[in-house]
Image 1 (cartoon, rainbow, N blue to C red):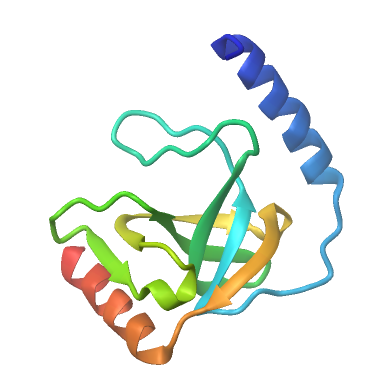
Image 2 (cartoon, one colour):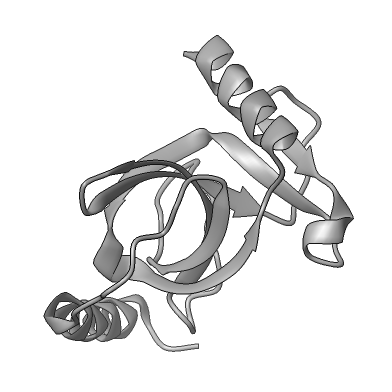
Length: 131
């Protein structure tokens, strides 16, 4: 595994290319996408450093910015996680309700799925209860 500084350099190079890109689509709420993002710190969920991508659920579009919530395959038995039906991914997937952020549309890589309305409403209600 490369050392930490080399990883940061790789990510910065990747971000520069990402910033140059033009995206001619607008993802919609309830959709799950891979987005370009990298290493978090402290208690934030991390992901594989090799590919700089992570699945997220889109909560809301705000012009070219999107409010998204992170996803994981690791379950923790507490009120910060919402379990998605395996029909979406062929494996267990969970919404990390406490980890949402705004991202630019340039970060979007690939659409994965669109969740049903009842799951989406429940996720939004649980986030509201947390905050």
